[in-house]
Length: 365
Ligand SMILES: Cc1ncc(COP(=O)(O)O)c(C=O)c1O
Image 1 (tube, rainbow, N blue to C red):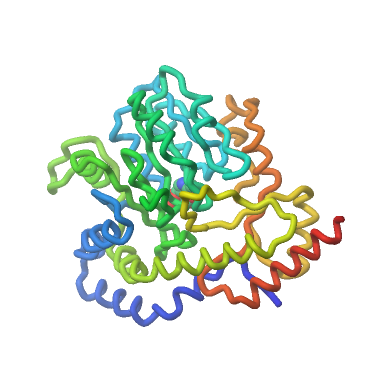
Image 2 (image 1 turned 180 degrees about the vertical axis):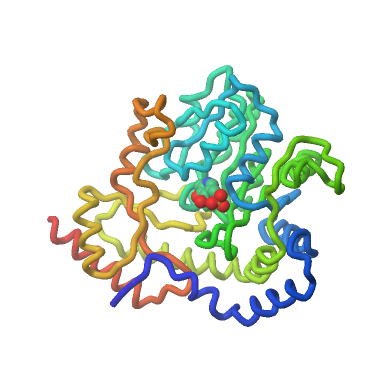
């Protein structure tokens, strides 16, 4: 048997005819940028995800950039970012001229919890980018309280957390901004790059909409300095088709995750707080001797991924931070392996993965 790490075709295939119709609509309408599907998508996304003031954009990295531009950071301002994340969450802080301050993550939930954030707060901290990595969320209540008492902006990076929730409230609603990526492999993925941001305040959303459109809401009226980061019509129409399936696809992920949690023997997996609904973009395990384990998976044709092998503070572009010690982020980077989990994965495939993994563990006893 061969089990892929992910197979986008399984979920997409039944939608091919619909995608085809959408594609021809775009060709006929000639409105490749700024078509009606854009506002329709934003509205539909807002309802499906229960988030407010949605602005679509070119990708999830720009979505975070838009949030940081909106809060007007100064060169000395600090933004706390977990080091165990995709580089996007940090690089945009530098792009707006502020300073990223890297924090660690919790050893059980693998996301930054209050204690990890608290350890890095100074009187220069203006914002925290909380990354709901793998789809998991920290215990949100004390984080929200702590930051709001201090007037520190919370930005939720929900690139991996479509429909994840805490106490029934979806990710993206806890911060001043929530940012989303629709990179093809994400739980809601486009056929190229695309992203969106939701904002608590509609005027801030309007500013961000301008920012993504060269600073203009009306043609030739460039009110603020902006950039070009618009979702194109074709991506919006593909995402619109997919939106009606996202709940079913998320349920499939949850079912697969539950089986892994129940059947894997002796593996360290991720802890999910009782109040959290983790949408399981990724199912991570931690394992000593990852090289040998990866080799074993290769031999058995089991696909896997590593998210991420180097914590951001140790990347060459963050040289001044390279000597910083963040033990848990470093341990996750060294031991993490992502198992196959995707809509359309069969029971047989999962049984195969679990059986082979458990055999590996038994052979080590
Ligand atoms: C945690 C996280 N933040 C931000 C991003 C950036 O999204 P994009 O690739 O759409 O720019 C990603 C996606 O790769 C991500 O996983």
